[in-house]
Amino acid sequence: MQKRDVLRHVGIIVLLSVSVSVGLNILLLLINLPQYSEQYQKVSEILYAPPIWQQLLTSGLLIPIVEEVIFRGLGFRLLRRWIPFSWAMVISAVAFGAYHGNLVQFVYAGFCGVLLAYFYEKYQTILAPILSHAVMNIVAIVLTQTGIFADILKRGIVAFMVMLFCDVCGMALFLRLQKMDVTKVLKMCCKD
Image (cartoon, rainbow, N blue to C red; front, side):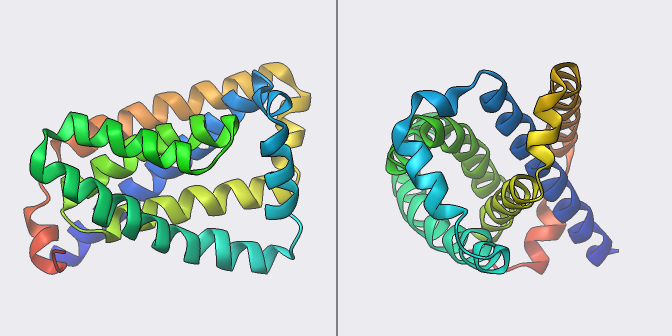
């Protein structure tokens, strides 16, 4: 029973992270935000230049671990000792967005930072935001490198419908997660 509870929570984290990654990426591409950030275009060229296996290893695994230890494990947790959750979440999310150094990633990482702080607060372990961050990065890499994002954007109404679907799914998953009890999961996993 406890393993099933853990898998249920992991599934919600993964599906919610996929919804956020796809929906937010499509929104930023639909409003054509990348065209307004020359710095993002340069960073994007660098990030997507290596072979996909290297991108998945670095951006999909190593970077989420390091960034989550810094921004949630240290930054958010320190803020949380002194200020309420909502303020700590917003401040750490803005810092996370600003750290990325360009407009597109500021918006994307800022919104994602809110979700990552929520996961850290809910589960009281760095493992939840690491998982979410890794999933979001992997989804972005795969859908960019396979051309799926480009194909979706070619069909404007399809892009809008996919974004809307991700938004609805994301909200439903978030509401479901709000009602879920994490005590059984916390007993199985170590706390920070």
